[in-house]
Length: 522
Image (cartoon, rainbow, N blue to C red; front, side, top):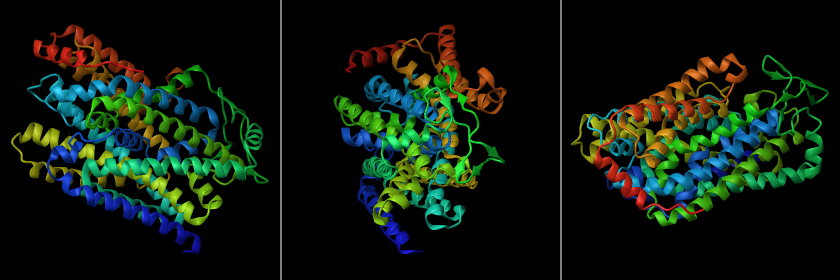
């Protein structure tokens, strides 16, 4: 290991020590009860709520996956995704946050998303609870694997150590950390990680633009690549066995592809996913006062827009600086690492690299904790052992956490995994399974329990069917699976609710109570 790598390692180690310190500090409070462990006792302030929601949401794909897309195929795919996510972020905070915070208390002081949906419809037989918990378990295992892929790529690229070793080591660190502090530690560290992430993105972008000779030099260079710097076109690398061809140091591209209306709508639909993201929705439930959500919304959207624009711009800038450096789609996701290690002083590069580790940890600990709560709190205590003690719930939670981590590691063993694709599937799963039913539950009082069950199943199953069977048909079917799944789930909820017995008066009264206490403000 050379001197530069030693400085990078020192900076990243310092970061890890701070994060572990946060976990130890909050561990005593976290273990007071399962309520504190899973939702922090609803004590989060506006800054902590906003920053932890966004940091846990974006994950390593923000610093590796999104810049990698921009580096590989240019502006269009990445920027339309960023626009969809920005719109989705704002609407989720504006429409869902306040009402969910109030409703989760009215509905039996619910502390998990499956528990809220179950109590919202006053279930005796916990069908909604079970379905929601199982979908969370499946999709968060996939999500966690994407984080493990990120940390594996990071350390194997930095220190030239076998990917699988580094991936497993990173996964074990995340598991130990999640064991320590629970939701409070996770949220507090996410606040710090959110700051590190935006610092890393902005600093690297500024240095990258300067190194490339300025914005005009970057734009003029990438405009020479067919479709690379267009909103309605897309670059198409010339590939042989998945490897981009290079001649005389210049990467080759085929004729530009068309990025039409259907592709734009498909990409914008990423924003729909926010309505069903448990890691974000849980922050809405955990804030100490509903009045503070307005401040949180402003903080969150500013962070989100700056971070997304910087991530896309880094990918574009990277293609100017290192045009033939990364010649596979999987390798292109390392452009952030390549730029950091070559353009920044070693210690600062270590801090920036900590941004990737921060993004990975802030998401993976959220995924593991929520998935563990779905099994321990919702299935174990909610269905099988209703008189379970907090100690028993916590034990089941930790066992579940370990099992999820093991399956996530198995999925992540392939170092050729493309982070962006793994994340997009899990994102679609959550968005289609929970997004429609969350909106209907909060805003349409005629939604029935049968409608909720049918809609969740329709959304989740459609994601698998569309991804694995339908999308390969091409043409009008080649759209992001979240969009058709979200629409189908919404239609099913609406139709089944109209055809089944209307909700009980107790459910309608609760709905009106929450509705009467909610005022939206821009």
